[in-house]
Figure 1 (cartoon, rainbow, N blue to C red):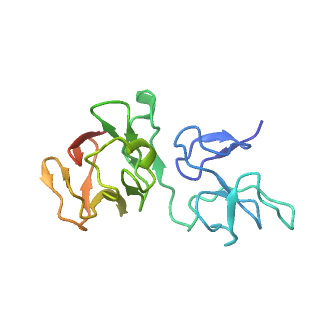
Figure 2 (figure 1 turned 180 degrees about the vertical axis):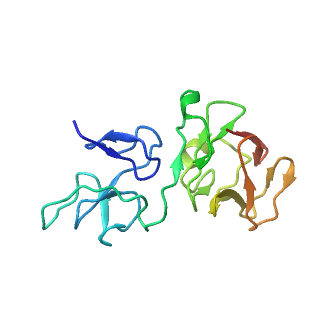
Length: 186
């Protein structure tokens, strides 16, 4: 079986995968050229991206891997679990591991953190002190930041309260408090 490189984390995965086994990103395929990526538009030809296996192309596909759907350099993503072989290193996306259980948040640029809305809603639905739309992750250069969205119970990074709508950087070893729930950055 052939393998392709995940456009999000760079891991090699079977070419018939719909999701990356390492970072969990949904793999999308360009309807025009068949390139695999993870954004709305193809970084190779600009065509629309659809779930892998659902593309109906006019021409014969050529399978290439775009480093990023908009042509930026690849962003490495750490696995949601696993051993030290996948621990956060230089250039990798940190994970936020809740101290009270097995909830792990893997930041994605622009992803909303909320109990009722956003990418992590299913994981956070029982976290009563997290607002419906609490905060969001943003990437600024090589730094990952947390932005409080005027939440009721606020956000803290290393016990420093975030100013609403102001991105605050966090890194491996920090403690991020989201609505009074503590997450270790690993």
